[in-house]
Length: 104
Image (cartoon, rainbow, N blue to C red):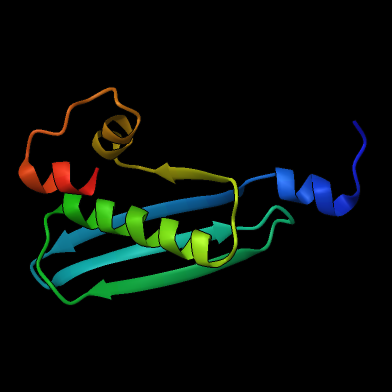
C-alpha cells in the first residue's frame, strides 16, 4: 500500500531513549524522544527523592512514556542501557523487589 507522507510518518514509531542514575547527591534521568522525522527532544530531570539506580531507570522510562503519550505518539520504541529493566519489561526476568514490581 502506498500512503501519504502523513500516513507513513504516523506508522513510524516515536523513539524513546532513557537513562537514569542515582548518586549520593540525588537521582537524575536523561530522556530523548526522536520523532519519525528525526527531530530530537532532549530532557534532563532531577528527581526530588532518593532512589536506587534501578528505580531511577524505571522512573526515566515511565516519565518518557508519559511524555511520548502527551506528544500524541501512537507507536513507541523504547531503549534503555539497563539490562535488568529491559529484560523485566520484556518479561524475560521476573521483578523480585516490591518497588520493581510496582513499576512493571
